[in-house]
Length: 388
Image (tube, rainbow, N blue to C red; front, side, top):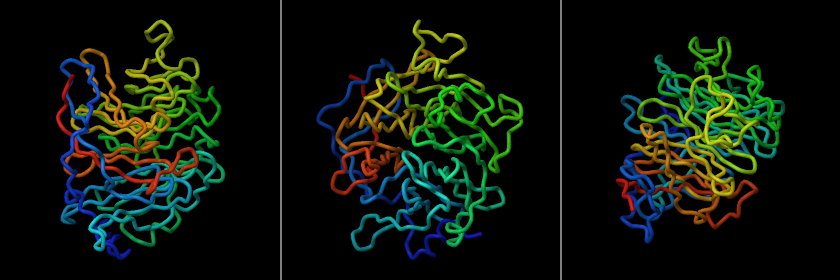
């Protein structure tokens, strides 16, 4: 089985060594957003983001693939929603920066509305086989497929279906996938325009799903024989785990509140009965309140990542980056906005090289206002949190 580096060699490009990216310039922002939590710990952006790569077309997901033993470096992959293309970032010897090389198109992708090639994930089996997982909208459904990673022909070959039959629609497709610290594959699904399905335990819609790498039901899932891990979601698109292995998720509200939720196995997050925190300020009828919420024009949350004690959340409609500081002992999460309106719609976030943050813009998807060079990946240095 070829390593990720062999795949890059087959495409005629050299590997991106994540630790070898250009260093962020040592700039400091003129005005620092105020951190509201006394005693909060974590990191925050330092300085102005700079371009890692430009010229992407409706990108949706970043996947950072760690170095395999003996390979010497890792690689970064980007998926484009509308055309289903999978790109790998490579060194550009002419410019000294980075460029993107298409390594294939995920078969079966049908773009319509918010559907297309959505989340990507990477998995390496103990046997040494490497897989690229994709959440895609097809002509009939949303589904999760996997393609052997490391063989150039496999990218354009027929994928192996992991899970099919997830309802599709012009919007509310969910679409984020990621492997948790337990080795299981998690997927977010939207209600596909049928809000009541989010409360139906027999439906895959409006859920966070948990499955084995081949799509089986883990024995310790909260509902026996079911892939459902949590329910009552409208359109979740961000999932990440903290240092303790606790899962958190971000989700689009309808007209009032977007949410940041601590996900409990079998938990019900209220949609469509409750949007945001219950009216009395506490969970009611068994629904779990969000730890943080925003008016929908300030977030429209998509990608979520966790770096050095801090969650970072990409905001689409809000056109800003949210840094979220969780204090579980106090039962609270405080959010701080960065770069509001400066880079347009933000779709995904991921750990960058040397402890930095990568931010994926999403201005070419038909809903944004593209700037010159859009879409792009931005990189910003992170520094220890400062209050005030």
